[in-house]
Image (cartoon, rainbow, N blue to C red):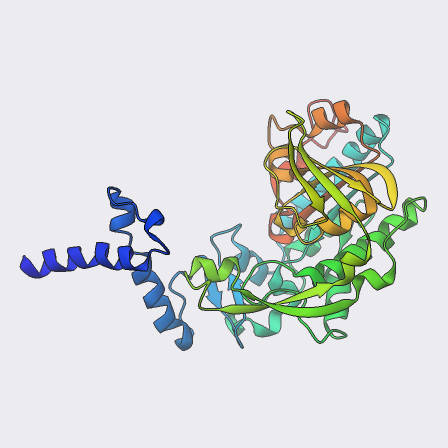
Length: 366
């Protein structure tokens, strides 16, 4: 009993000593005093060099310091490893029919162009660093999706990113994070611009110099490192492209309340869960864009702000869920263009196959 009581007393002492300063110590909160994160961090640090993940459901360890998402989110590993099923092809057909109907509805509301951009999973672009048992199948469920949607409304970035990684000295994705970095986002945005230009030649796009690599900074580990409690222990590289060459000032406002949340230099915007209006002074086009996006839009957001003077942003899940605000924002704000950015693992979400209440599904597609 004495040994058990002594060990219990050690935990608060460790947490108090590890606090950055006295103000962060919560003397009366059990959740602070008996927090065991330090033990998780210590265990992860001991097992990481051995190639063992302390949370394999969220994170698997690859080769040469590369870390990948586990099955906890959208069954990413399991889905990517198997060939496409009949259900995958059926879902692709459903989403394709819904995209056609949605495009017709948006056109009836004055929207000039509707496009969905798929941000590839890291394993789709860098499969060589995955463990052999986790290598993705070719073809896979995303190919089944695109077989149903076609490439008119959907932009597939996998080919461009795979080609670009052979030309770049720096990776296009973070080793310790699920996302592409700014260099990868630049490749994605440039490909997106080329695709959109075919249907909307009136839009001006950033020059080639904007996508050039200017320097490489260091940064702490990303979200995958955080899952292992190793953010400070693992480091990553931060390629910086020449976005700053475009002199852009932005203002971020809550769309509903009109409250100004930020004003200043053009910076990355995290995925908003409420409608966020980003207005840019000096943008290449005086255009209104409704952009439904997720975290893969964060590194894209400075380029989007540099290109369009008004970009209304909202996480696609908040907009497209049952009772979401997608149609209302279209009706009220009257955008000229509607773009969606969604990570590959979520691109088959059934909400993309749903017809908004104001859109009548074509006969036989319900």
